[in-house]
Length: 108
Image (tube, rainbow, N blue to C red; front, side):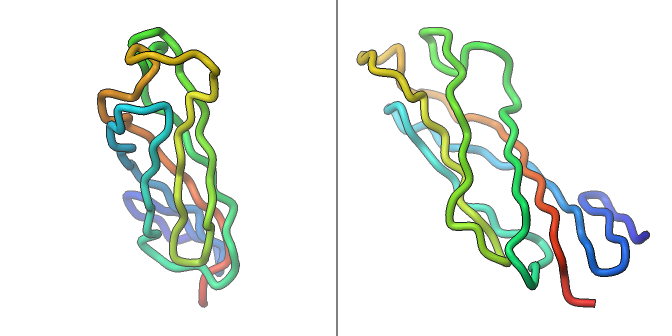
């Protein structure tokens, strides 16, 4: 295997990861675009994680993360509170730290 600060690679399979921040949106949704440091030749598997304890919004809820627009070079990670309630206590008013991890095939 080859290793670095944010990756492990065995032959042409690379597992890489990194931090990101979903910006405050003052609404119940927000997203961030991720560019992979090393591009994949196929669409990788991407997993996001929230890096904050309970209470992402002042009402005490955490919300959900989803991944879309995945390609060999990056993806979009979206946060959604996904509840019917309205009001400012349900809005994302502070940046949300997350991490991502992608695994897939890279050029040899």
